Image 1: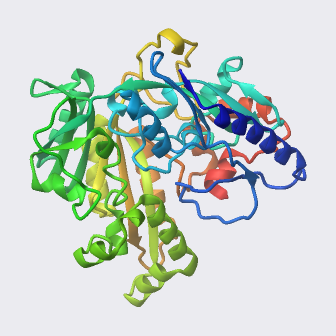
Image 2 (image 1 turned 30 degrees about the horizontal axis):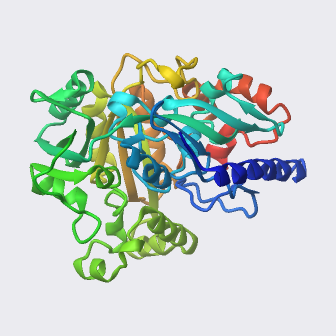
Length: 463
């Protein structure tokens, strides 16, 4: 096992510092983390926060046990950089580089290995959590806390250290882009691959897709391979999502595959002009990153430029629709039909997922939760994550959250969920029914009895 002693020391000092910081806050002061980056889209301001410097290191990688110990604020960019030299990767690598391990566990994450390995929290072996009482508890002794962390968004505690499982990789990924004109056909293909883990007789290691319109759907299957006849590069002038329409197959290094979406933040860089050939040549490569684009979006929210432009064009304004939702695979065509008809955003990302059932072994063996009560999924179902990130114009008289609320209502009738990293408008009763309200209340009373940390509904819906 390789161990970074200095990082361990800094981690312990950082844990002591964040505990002191929490204890020093007045009882009525809001509690938040002072993070360098964020992938949340609830721009609600607020200064201060608990310092988390020193909690952002990869502490160790064990290539034999295939585990890594990491600080809760460690980004996946840094974790992947530490694991790939060992021929390993996290079981699920969320698609944006600055997503943190702790954020992906308490706030969810997903990617193209999720059809096989579920969501990032399902590969957590154990975690150290700072609770509202100021204690640092190990989930090895408190398995109910581990089960309740996913989708809790720091309202039960902050993950300071995590041990996660790793998976072996090969150096390259061979991609096949398969077009379907009909949503029913792509849904059936997703269902088939999610259970067989193969397509056209060949192994599938990664699975996702893109919808460009009501009659243009693509399923992309990836297979890890040892050799590649050529390699594409989408970190420069090339744009990955456009290549899906332009070619049937492709090869990428495993590193470039894991970060294929980050250079253009999927396709959201187009709204900032970065996909224009002239702008792209002038825009420094080091700034073609999702975290840079997010800061520009935050600036736009503050100054209201998009709202002003929409109003000058005759609209009542624009509503940001930045969401990831989970839909049972057999309801995907119905959801997409609604989405094309009422929302009209494209492209749309599709990513199948199933709750992970693989038993742990070796050093990773532990009592693993059978359910995740704050984000319950049927273990017998295949779901498809539908991701859409853009603005929609508002008609006169429509509420500022009109489109987002319609999406919530449609999801409710389909047995779906949505992630809570962005705008949510659920009434309290609906919210509690969807996100384990009763269990959350019990966990909140156990691990934050004085309500030192924010309430989940308050944090994610009412602000």
